[in-house]
Image (tube, rainbow, N blue to C red; front, side):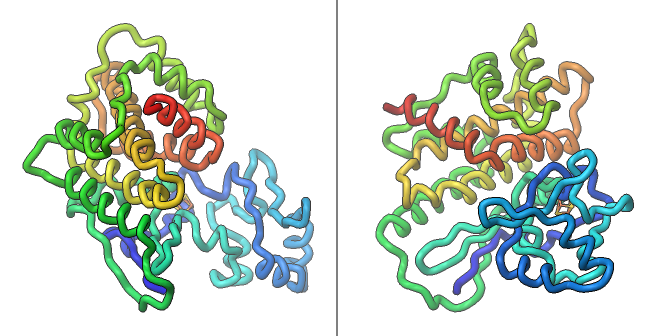
Length: 318
Ligand code: SF4
């Protein structure tokens, strides 16, 4: 199968014990059947520990989270006991894949890195080269269907628009929203959006506190200055959302909604940085990496939250 990855993809390496927001904390990880069958057969002391930390619910096995929602094999030094005892190739599918995502098309797999991982966030947003895609493998599947072909060509136009460095990022974002023929430009009222985001499912209390501050802030939070200050970073952020989501429109036809979601995600993240600047007098790239990570965990990794936001945009366009 043909595989497509972004230009920065091969540079990713999990930072394991140096990670401050390990994906082994707070996530209940389902175990695929192949790995579960293997884990059931592991003997010795580690085999006993392995089995006692797996629960089976409705036919699906998952690891039982321990104290403070830590994965049962996450050691104090941040390394993985399962990895050490059984080897990398015995990690279950989810642990092997994370933080990668895959979109399947008729003739290819499009793979990317998710911003929810702090190292992926740093890597994606600090990439200086323009976004491009690298293809490998043979095309053994069917040919692309008409919807896929159409949306891929539209996505190319969107990415070309956002990476056109002859224009300022704010102008590029405005052009982006004018590309579909029925896309309402969302009202950029931060109090409204903070309230809408506060209605969504909450995974991290820190995100709720940020939203409350945005809602209560008196005065201006000039997000345009932030876009300009971190122009390349916001270009990468915008392209990340386009690459990850727009292709889904080949199935659900939510082309405008995915672009509005991209636009509002960039707006929200820029507004949070403007808030940090208003509070502390300075904002750094590290703040951007961190806010993008929290945003991604809260919104992208909750199907419910993503659907609710897309519904808001669909109603707007109706
Ligand atoms: S969040 Fe990313 S860097 Fe951290 S442990 Fe997971 S994969 Fe590694």
